[in-house]
Amino acid sequence: MTKEERIELVTRMLGIRHKLKVHDSMKTPDTHDELSVSLLSRWELEDELRAIEEVLNSDREANVKTKVKGILEDYLGGKGPLKKKRQETP
Image (tube, rainbow, N blue to C red; front, side):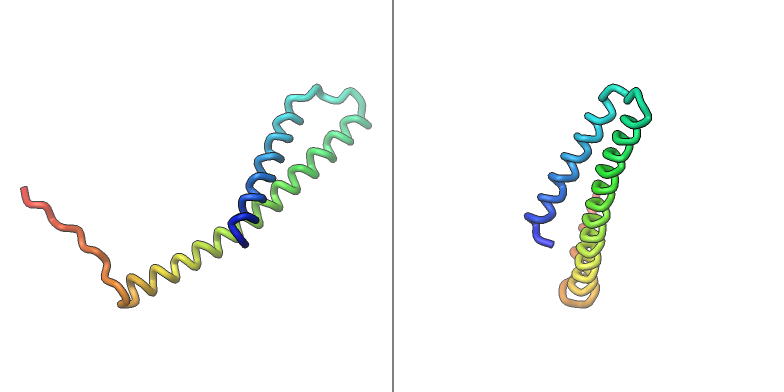
C-alpha cells in the first residue's frame, strides 16, 4: 500500500470518527422507526471504521515484519556490527 493510500484511509477514518461523535450528540430518536434508521446508519459507520482499521493494522503488521527482517539481516546477520555503548568512567 502506498503512503498516499494510507493517508487517504487515515483521513477517512478520522472523518468517520467525527461523524460518530456528531451522531452521539444528536437528539435521541422518539419512535422505533427513527431509532432503527439511526442504529443502522451508526452500524454502517462503525463497520466501515472497523474495516479501515483492519486494513491499516494488517499493513502495519507487514511493515513491522519487513523491518524485523531488515534488522535481523543487517545487525544480527553479520552485515553490520551493533554500535557498542561506551562505558563512562567516573
